[in-house]
Length: 188
Image (cartoon, rainbow, N blue to C red; front, side, top):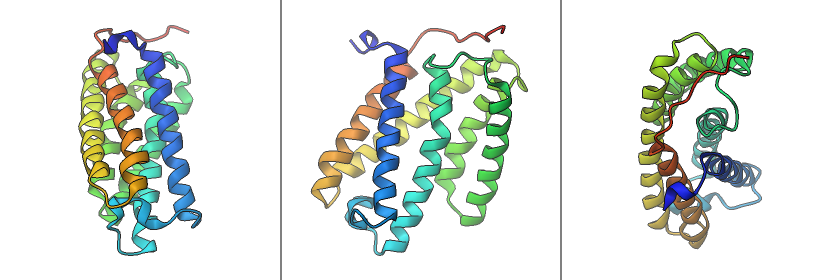
């Protein structure tokens, strides 16, 4: 039944839910939404909520171009210069998150680096589908855990709104992770 959803539709859905989530985190950073709305309502301070929100914004933003390639919204092999820069951004983020001791962020960014290297043409395509599956399954597991935590959250906003958003993301990531097609490099 999930395969009735096209890979492109799944990609658009994931990107839109990522953008929505980034918007929510920005509302928290700018104090338009209470910091208790994230972190299960258990974050002890505005500072802790901002740190969590910024880390999440970076992880979600880093994944958007990768999801665009995985889902077929962007052809593999296009925008090589962008993905070379994106690869450098990934390494810089790992250093920054290492200094901040944000190990979840390091792991998430690390799984995206091989995809950026292949999309930039710096790594062989044969490895792409392996790294692709690892990235998608890891993302699915992380978002599924996040869904459970959202559904167990203290605030109604986190249980209903963010719980629904992460359920949608998990279903769409599962759809992409179980896709049988092999991506090929665009010759242009």
